[in-house]
Image (tube, rainbow, N blue to C red; front, side):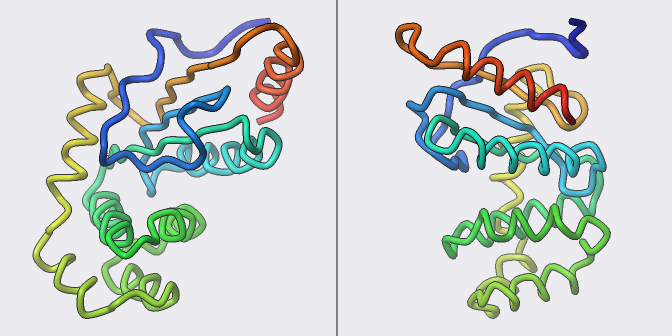
Length: 178
């Protein structure tokens, strides 16, 4: 079995502004530095969704922004504006499902579709309120060796041997089927 990529370290420490799906004490922790406009990040999005379905309560996903282009940065800002309205993951999904629609008008349309407080969203986007939050993710990525997207950090938390083999085989099977 050959492995593409390089394993450099375990999952970087979480911070209070991280976006997590699942419990960080779960068996498998997957942290991604991604870009809403990156085709490879889009393919990774689909893989992560499958892993969430298959591993359910044994899976924790953490997403950090690493935009490579101006539209990607605006999309990341809009996801952070969504987080303020408790809709980060809904916006995250829409952005990855529509990577060619990341102009400002498209982002407002997404916000309307998700029933945001539109005046608040527009103020935050116009004022670039969330740029520092996105930059913190970029800085974190760079300090952890991220240069392109997507980059994943994987940590496994498992006590004992019960179901360990099945969990690892499921992870490998998902990885090989993509």
